[in-house]
Image 1 (spheres, one colour):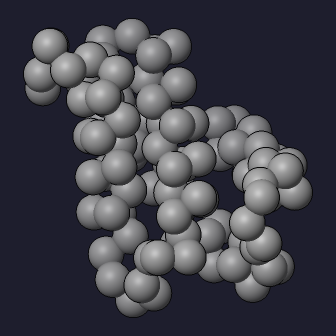
Image 2: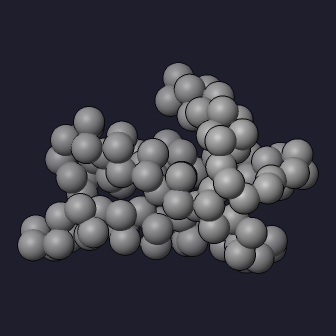
Length: 99
């Protein structure tokens, strides 16, 4: 359920982004990044202890990843890249709480 909603959001967001994205880029993003959605969400719930905040953090993570996907190097560890973005999102929203 979460993944299907996010996939439609990615397609809708790509049209609104200022940087040009090709269909190949969208397909690569879906192939590389979307399979990690549930793992990111579970980790965000553990870190934030609130499903609503976790959902927001994962959404922000994927938005930042989409914006920076032109800098992502294919063949590298996409999961690690996404988790680093997630940790940065969580930390930026809760800098005093830590992990």
